[in-house]
Image (cartoon, rainbow, N blue to C red):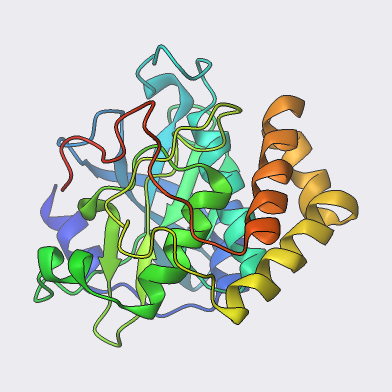
Length: 251
């Protein structure tokens, strides 16, 4: 990352979600560096619109590495779909995320989150943090195949964001996560209420219409079925015996 990129990171402003979304959609993207540890092309950028500016992550579709179990060129859309689900939950799990054109073509653009590097991720993963419990429910809804510890972004105020949702929403069960501490436990009342809202939105609301633009019809139907199953059982899911339950590497 360049010195300019590091300076932009330190200057990251606090934006409400709607302002952040407008900035991400309409602002001018400038690439400042590349996150070389990422498996797909992941660019650290600044985005500017008038007097507004922020740091963001831009993942162009052309930089996506082909996967055997997900259709080519769909990871950016899945990241946006995950944000749309997060937005309906009200849990602020996924940072503001849009699909837009950029210097290397269309792709996902997401607000950069400056995580608290003093937090022990191993201890956090093993904790009963209520934000992680919400994230475990969210991951079951979106069928997250890659919830690593490194995809958790804890903030100094205690909130925890989750990122890297490109391998979500498969029509086949693929839940792989490090957050199994609530497996088989009864869902909290808050989660049941949120799942009810998701069910209504997926069936007849804006969320269902939006996900039809971002996912295939079988993937949307599978998402609806997962929500219905969670409501019916009232339980956090258990790990499957048919595939690895924890992503590798776990961090």
